[in-house]
Image 1: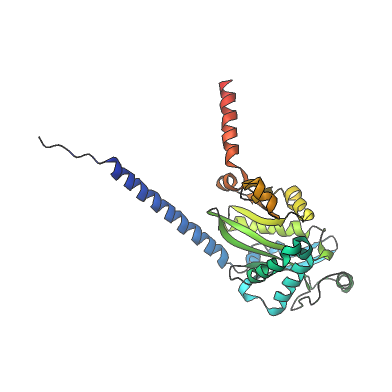
Image 2: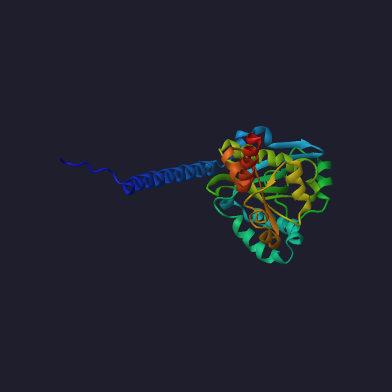
Length: 276
């Protein structure tokens, strides 16, 4: 009698591995396309016209979009002047190295910007008052009022999750503590959601207590599981920064906001409760 040859477990394993590899490749391709599509939008502000202007607390502000590989020399100079004015003391001895990194980062093709200008509609007295306050010299004055800050962000993959990563949010002292930072971060979160990003991620220097309080307490960001202090307490002590995040979906929350141990503890607690 002729016997039938049953498929071996090895053949089944190979088939399952091929299917898994295909799924991984397809997901990666989809994520890459998502990042590419988001980065292709040269003027995200067009989708949020109400966010082009900020008029409150004595400020009259106009926002404009930009790209890292399209920066004029005057804007490059302004960015580095403001970065140095705001960040040199916070970085301390690390600033010399960090300045070179930031200079390179700011002109990358994938860098996206929101430039913050005093609105042309601002009254002469308002402009004179703001201009008399301390700010880096050589402000950019093109077809709009002087620049008073910027946001540098990118669409990228972190832990295989599509995120909007805020590289810099820098404002001059004369426009700080007036709700403008909150306004800009609300815009950033809207841009992230519109482009189907799963989270907003950013890095903050530990020494920058004002920024830490702003993100953690006012905007309800959390220290991410990928931040050095969460990965390894000893590593966290060595590092001068924390990685903060706000996740928008379950997968991102599981990766960026909830440590794997938390899941185990929650499951144990649930089991104990059920058993009781």
